[in-house]
Image 1 (tube, each protein chain N blue to C red):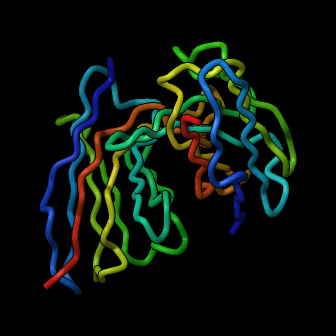
Image 2: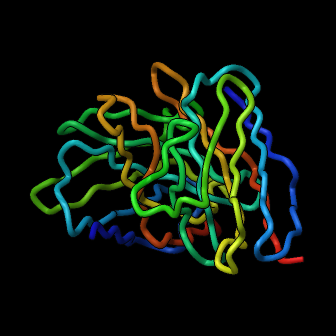
Length: 109
Length: 123
């Protein structure tokens, strides 16, 4: 099973700052990596798929990059509603199997 | 707007079968992968499996021997059955829609989710 490790566990920033979240895979997942945002009491929300493609309706301040084993989610300028937990999720090639990282909590400084 | 809604018992006894249903509204069930994902404090988010293409399935190998996901497109719903449950199966269960964004057979992400339902396994 491919293990995803996210860092840092907690990130404390202020509105307007830039956030950089990391996700590292235990083996190459090519570009088959997605990012989700989850707020308390809500389901996860898909932000990015295939490492860098924004899902429909996702603001342009969210961007993803990376391939192979190292991936990054960047939020260019934090809005108050962006403070949440972020998860990465990989899909191996065939047969498709899905695993999630343990999450990074983005909190207000 | 696609909406998903889980329903089913919130309490299941050990060794029994957990059964949940997800009602889909606001869109067609064809061309998507109707999925179950669970979340617990100990294991985080865990993909359980999905049904697609009028009955094809794909399951997490670690749960495969106990899981059945099925769909009833005439009722716009799909279901999860997880047998022989233990306390380790206690979690919030989400139904979700997998989207392959054109890469048939391989969902690239889960773009719509239900609000989740807590299932506790306890006697």
